[in-house]
Amino acid sequence: DGSKYFVSCWNSNEVRVYDGVTDALLDIIPVGNSPGIMALSSGQGRLFVSCMNDTSTFAATQGQRGAVNVVNVQTHQRIKSIYTGFQPYGISLDEATGYAVVANRNTDPSGPTQHHPSLCAGRNGNITLIDLNSLNLVSGFKSEVSIDPISVSVKN
Image (cartoon, rainbow, N blue to C red; front, side):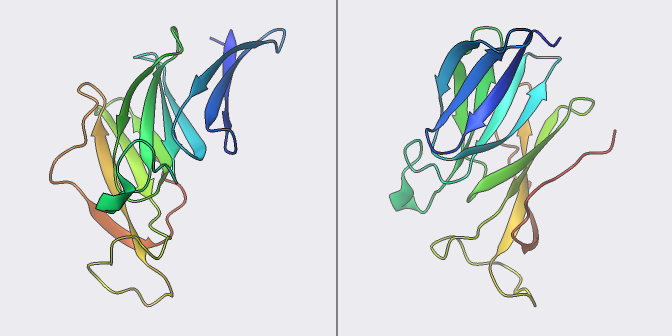
């Protein structure tokens, strides 16, 4: 509604909330390491924040890096952190079908090896889905794509 806006702060691992009229700082929300891309679910009042290099939320020793954090835009509280795949970055919401679509980059050499070798140098990324109602990863859906997918867009 324009009453506030959110800014992801990569180096301080937080999302800052500002007043939409006065630009005054309203709140600071701690999230995982390296918050980047955000997507707003206006229908559910949730902000999805990709934290590409997060190793604090999920154990990096298990080969996991990154998380998508879900924030309540009214209370400014983090609702949940979801492991969507190695180094999540781009997020797009399809509220008509009830999914958040996440592009997982997989650019770090410690990331998972690709199922299908790429003709380009590097590791393939993948696309995963989050169910907007349950806030769980959609089981069984993982689409491998070419190297380093940065963003994703959904056509409604």
